Image 1 (cartoon, rainbow, N blue to C red):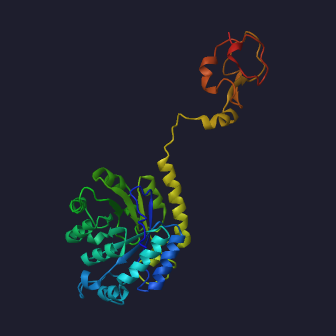
Image 2 (cartoon, rainbow, N blue to C red):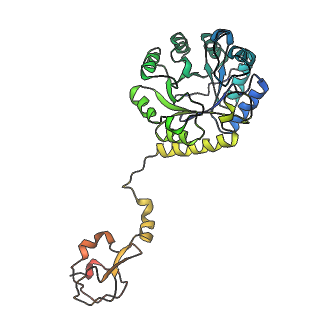
Image 3 (cartoon, rainbow, N blue to C red):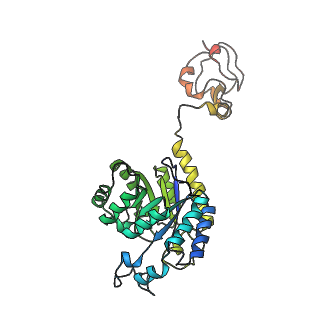
Length: 339
């Protein structure tokens, strides 16, 4: 029986566990990472679909963190087949988790659609790959664009490759690993929402989950964070990824801050604080015994709990009035006692 789609338009908050290539080509480890990410609270699990021959030449330069093998050899060694990815997709959908993959070639886009991925992620290095974007548009899948290496003009051109009905999310992202606080760029989230008719989010490469929490407070609908079962696993990402406990804590914090964002408070509605106001606020009372006919002033008045009398806020209505009766120390002033 075909798995029913777990993705809907009204998705709330997507929390993506980026497994990426932390599996190092080990399918069983990918399964373990997937199940662990789901248990930690992710509602999206993301992989990377690399096909060495389709995305890189054999002599392409490698990033500095690849010291023992070329990028081509790494992608070739760690590739998963369609059968393997189909199994991973099935695991996700069986738990009502949304499967997502980054694509790095036109062929990987076609395969991603074929095996049942529900979200396609266009990574930062592919934003300028117009042929790939056009292929992604054909899938009609929810698409996430990562802006880590992009200028506004790059994003403007990328967005033009999608039709008006396309479901798009643009992530603020900084392609620095890890990203220092001053480079996170949370200000870009609101700029994206003003500039484009899309959802917004954050692909967070910082060493803290606080940045993701801040992004949700600013209206982010998608948060992506690298996930690992151990920071000692092979690859460029595991060491700065969140482990299951850290990820679960982040998920709870994100859900909490999302609730605050969705529930604006009316500052004038203070019904819930009626009892608290009585307990904690101050009423105007006699500072000492006051004789009938004596004028009230700051020398013979005091301000004390409880707040069930004339509020201290109304002091200007009381000063210089005469008392119509003898008042005892700490007795609350009442309007009927005033001349």
